[in-house]
Image (cartoon, rainbow, N blue to C red; front, side, top):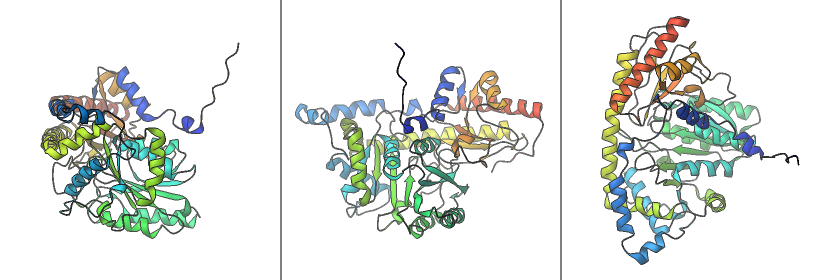
Length: 437
């Protein structure tokens, strides 16, 4: 008998052929490559002993332990949300422990990625608009694509999303009669994935002010993704964008313990305006009616005992060494290659590199094939970090991660990548002089 036709939802079809899946496939097919692509954390930094000890502590009493192995609650148990509120108050340098912030506005999620996905479901119908920095976190671009959102890129520079460019984009949408379809402005505030750029202190309140100013026909929320907030190696941390939202009705704050503690634990933290609490709770209830209960207790216990803080400092120290190794290798291997530039991040896990405009870096480019098949090194093509249908997206950029490799592995990977770039330059011509920004 002939098989029936498989009919998938529009969301499933829009989710097909995501870049993250192709990157994972490439990693498997090129297992002998040094990966400067993987956004994974350093395995040597994962707190095996700390987690083992903490799990033993929280399960030491059998009666209490059974409760932790039972279902939790959709937003996370209230006592745990109080612990995480104290943790946020410490990051915000608030001595009042943020006691004026209702616990009802806190969500404990399965990593911050779950909160991003829930927000996309809650806010967007097909054709609704999200404004994003150019470039931005490409996995969230896939989430937006899946719900049928229209993605509008906004110019970004070494100080993050440009308020002048954001105003211009909002004005164009207003003049086109589309302002009422704008639902969200998405900003990675600290050491953005992929560029490593942080939004400067003076731009943070300016971006919030624009979201408020243009909330004329409907509420425009600003999503502050602070996934890398704790991975600062140089300089001082500016106040979060969320801290400027005195009414707490515009900014959605998303944080995660995946980068600072363990992605296998999968605990994220969200603070949302009160009007979003019910719709997000309803959607999360449909998904899991509560993220992993035991995992939340493990992270909360580590925070209360301050063993978490000690671990984060060790993580910072390790990544600082690896960040410096990548920057030194960039100078040594690429410093004399014409037309190559890169950004020096103060934190995070990535270095953003730009080649001469005529050298493509995409999956189908000569450089990607040469790098992966001959020189045995992988990177993330920068074009993935822009909306797919944006005709002006640059094709000559790369995201380089120093998260997985050792310092020696980073140096060798950068040497191999430079060899591939030099080969393309030799084969296809030369560009302008190199400089490190």
